[in-house]
Image (cartoon, rainbow, N blue to C red; front, side):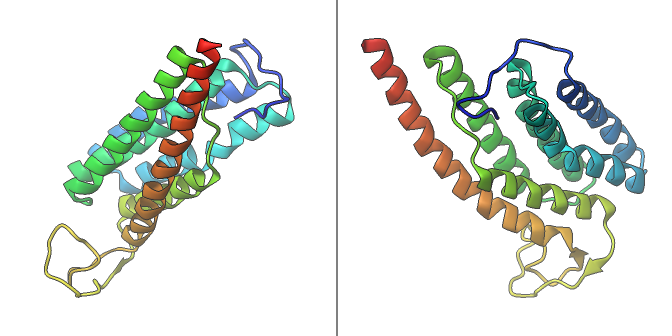
Length: 209
């Protein structure tokens, strides 16, 4: 995300945008590998796509090529990677449905709210750093669940099947990163909602002026 003093370009073919597009192409490739049983390759591809999240933004800022396309495409690719990540894990039976619903509903809410503020009120909500931390925890957790090794004993504090890690069944270590990511994502959603409300009021005030 550009800062207030950084010029935003209309260029499409920038280095950062090319990297973002490559990350976009990795998503269907990961999905095909996972559904065909290539867990290790799917994990590696997912890890590369997730770990390069910061790269395109850093390159754009350091080379002063922050673009309007990149400001839209980069977070959209993050959301697609998140959604396809959890859907793939649901299909192979490594995540309970409630986590998938939480992630998809949250991402749809943030995307719809952000798009509404931009196109209706010309207001953009700055990136919340805690959201990046939450995404990192979720991506690491998903990669661990994709790899599905090593597995650790459950905490055995309950017998609820849809709370992997808290029941007695062995589970991938990645589930604990997912839980931390969900807590941070919930906090981030509240922060974004507050900032979005302020941006809405600011846009209404500018329109009325």
